[in-house]
Length: 128
Length: 502
Image 1 (tube, rainbow over the protein chains, first blue to last red):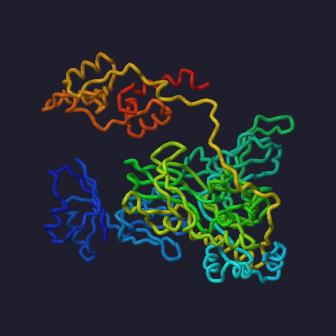
Image 2: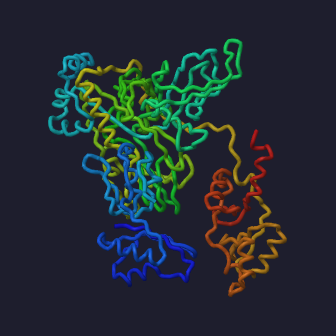
């Protein structure tokens, strides 16, 4: 399960992710993170059964957590199966099936949003 | 052996014609041989589905009461051409909305009408004795128009050069998003299904030939604009009735950072008359090659990075400078197939009969670049030649003095041999003074990655660099990287002196 974690770095610059790993023992995979002097946003991947534990611990440390049920999603009524997204995606989420229809491997998505801009048909959206 | 068009049409009428798609043809020819294929196959259908910017439609609205001679016309706030007498117009696919920019354009108006949505017509006029009305606003459905005739000046490119990008930033082009450092290759075209690639000598495709256009039965008008078949880049001008089109085969789209375009589904049935037709329609993706061009160069002559064929492009990756680079298409092969299949069904069911051109299309034409009687301003026309530069081993204080004396904000930095090695700005110097540290010399604080301009470069290219890198000056250098001048935002003011605006 993927979680989007937002935290402010105002109060003593707590190492939130490190602390959650230590406290819960869950190995967190950081897939993408943007952190500056005042705030940070990280996309993390955790095992489904430990999602609630990690989420609750993060919240107790002052972070805002958004559980992402879906990653990138495709509106099939808009998609024309051109495949422009295929070479843009850094994580190989997109590919053609044998019939040249676009298929998605959502689990690989790190929500970078590059495909959303590259899609001529406005068929791709990300939840955040 | 050869067949006549009337023999083929007779078979279509009695339902016995053997129709195959251009994708099926190579295997049939290798199985049955050329003579066998000629005997077996009567019609080969082609298809393509891709972004075809040069598209649009003529509309006739009928007269209002009191009547108006429309001079300026908008459909859903997308301006349409007002120079076609009272109530006719032409709307181009790439025209953007006045209010929604590239989110909505002419292509979307066409798709909305085809989808059965209502579109707002707004028009104005100065009013005449015969047409007193000055303005009109009304909601229209496709069925309310007397005519809605798609007429596309340049469609069905025979093939299209692929694109990559050697710069260090993402480019947004009509070839889609091009990642930095040759991060991807973008291409377009249906390869072996493309109509002209199956008739490269244009023996079968010409004026009056029936076609599939966005789901409707249409017709080839003749050669398309920029038709350049001698180099393998033939195009077609085509027409069809918008009222019979389907959203399935026409889609409005937006290329980020470029603009609006229309995806058009187009297919042409080719009669298999003789052995030459068999050979031409046996074309494979491997046989159709295109160049990969470097879109880093903002010129009509973009350098060729390498040559590839459609089989390589379609494989998903190619090798570029020793590295594996992902390829992806802007056109849809699945939809192209669908077009060829649907067209095959039409011919099999006798819904469409074939015709030979009433007038041939020139198969040897070469399209020329624009004749330019005037050149636009070049960097050397407006650059500041009195450029103050500084040696890299000078002290920062000296640089500050030079900046003050020269009343400039930018100092190109040169080395002992006079070659440009960096640039310092008033900001760099203020920073060095505010935070005194180990830096004493110009070379300690200069920026070494200098964006430069060349004297012969068009000012528009230089302006694009200023914008892209968010900087306010470009040192102008010769081939040996020696400073000839500097171009700052101030110099651009010279452009408004009137000399270049005549």
